[in-house]
View 1 (spheres, rainbow, N blue to C red):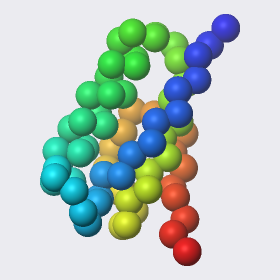
View 2: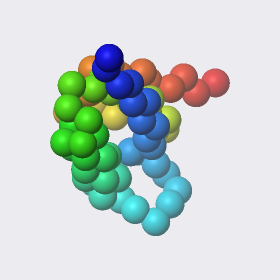
View 3: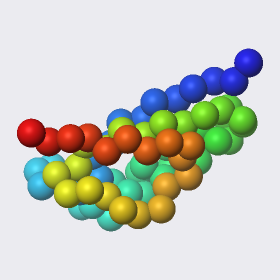
View 4: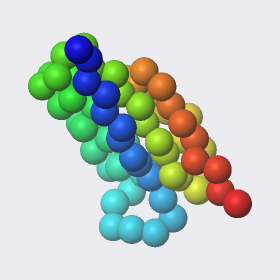
Length: 68
């Protein structure tokens, strides 16, 4: 049986304490932690950024959030 992790993010945020670069590193650390602690798991990321994030992420599926 494989595990599924759904990770939410907001890397390109206009508000907040952290820069987009810091948020990217935090997200990468989260993904690496999942890969280390739950090998073989599937990871889906849902990004709620104001501008679409196009950087490289080690995920199985990426879902952009639609802003209306």
